[in-house]
Image (cartoon, rainbow, N blue to C red):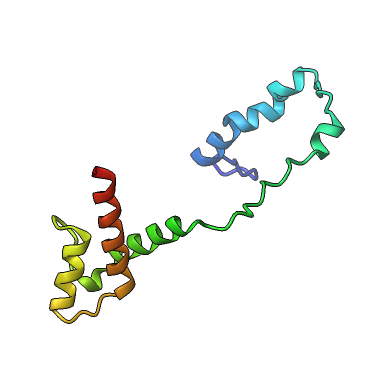
Length: 122
């Protein structure tokens, strides 16, 4: 027999939504709502204080430092061939023999450095 009432049954998804922890927390109240809110005092002066800027390096690089940078650039430049297992001067000579046009000032630096090392050994 059919009666005039429609029976509404919940779908499994609706049933799960009702039993979810979020939904239960809103019904029973959140766990955080049972604790008193305590704010820590902040130090306004400490917050506004900025660290001093780093000191400016006003020194000009020394000539030795500039020479080291040039030699480092020569070491890292692959246009003059690999640098593994040979000295800088040998690499410069090999690049010159193969027509790779290595910078002359690098050779001068290498010869100057070589004579400085020989003088230190004496």
